[in-house]
Image 1 (cartoon, one colour):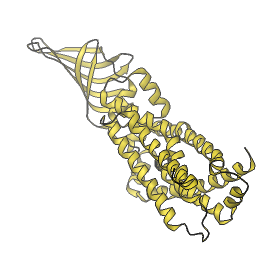
Image 2 (cartoon, rainbow, N blue to C red; image 1 turned 180 degrees about the vertical axis):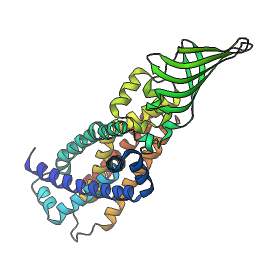
Image 3 (cartoon, rainbow, N blue to C red; image 1 turned 135 degrees about the horizontal axis):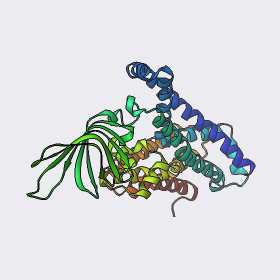
Image 4 (tube, rainbow, N blue to C red; image 1 turned 90 degrees about the vertical axis):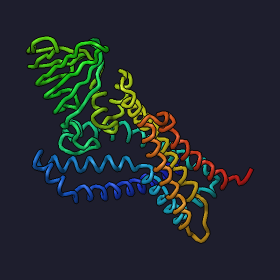
Length: 359
């Protein structure tokens, strides 16, 4: 890295870090102001766990808003460079805008990869260890302990599984009822069990009874019923794909997810995480496009407004595409990579127009 690239990277990284830190602090303050949930969590798991979950929640929301905070931080950093005439010196030395952007772009791509694969995965892993969804935190908001229906299939046929209590991401069920799907005219079968644990390719039922239409109840101590469901698929059905890390999503997609809606949500989330570094690169390009030009009077008011509005538009498009992809309305690749390509095209188009003019 040359000296100019080092100066740009340090200045931009410091300003982006400052904006992200301010955004994180505001969200953390909001989390602490939610005294009802904080006190309830403190009663259930202790004050230190409640405090830790507040920090983790603020961290995850900060990661969600990275496209906007990176854009604002980059704009602030570039204006700071202009105010000290450093960008003028860089231009006077014969460096083009493309040469100046090279190292900051590589820096933001690396930061995006670290954020999606390390920081986000760490936050989610700690959430899982603290059982955050069970006590009302995270995107699932405690759905794991509610009555739930599961549509299941396996070597024993298709059936509906109803559980009054769901624990450990759906792998442990309490007060279970199973209704088998039989062909027309067939005799119905119902199974009631006190507990069901997910094993490899089957549910292991404990302390239950089998009820047939034409026979007496048949109690059992243990019973196996086949299923193709996996822990990750059950977790997706209970909560959201947002509660799974990049590594968990990759493993789940490799193993296969039978439910089409859960599969669409997982694919969209996985592709969105892959595209985040390029969304951040698009935000950086937009910042360069709207603030890198020289202003003799030093007025950047409307230019900054235009850049921030574009950043917000990209953020809104990203979230809308994410919802559409998770619902199966839009292909996951288009939902995840469309906003990234849009941001990059916007930034490059404006830079080309300013540098080369109309062609």
